[in-house]
Image (cartoon, rainbow, N blue to C red):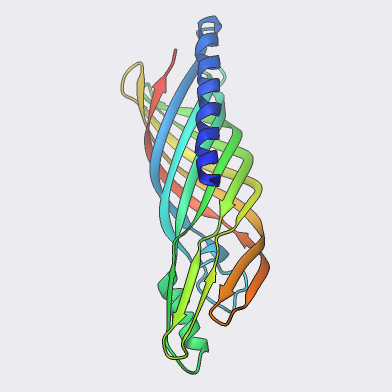
Length: 243
């Protein structure tokens, strides 16, 4: 339900902004540009988020995943900078194999099997960019953004056949603040279309409250955990000039 809400919210925000900017572009001066872009690529976890060691209490056991981004931009072409509104999401797969290896390393008897799905992060950010022209058709920009983020942990299931024993940790959600810095390269194919490649660092630290777990022994537990969710998002995409 929360993921469906996020999708609907992103749709209505972008529809409203696109309509507003398209309506007002007729009054814009020639030195201003309004555009939309969509990009897609990979997400690579960093630091504690990627750690696979039980000795690190902040280990996230996250692996690489996918990332997507929708952007509405407003460029002041005579000034060399612009404003950005970006809605993006990325998922990072839970590293179940290494989690099982860690359980087996610290357990004297038995053999553990682990399964889990993924972490996810949906963000709505505002920011600025500053670019330099590399040629008449290409430019490179640096960007900084800050905004609201919705994070989700994976559902994790563990099973041990010798004891026997099983346990389940349910997915949990958290609201937090995220920031992003990065670089983007743009090549203008024609007056309307551009190709875009970007590499951006995204950082957020989420507090997950009331993470519910239950086991085959009948126990039900609640836990709170802080998780850094820092990633590098590398994407390629298409931009459309609305002017």
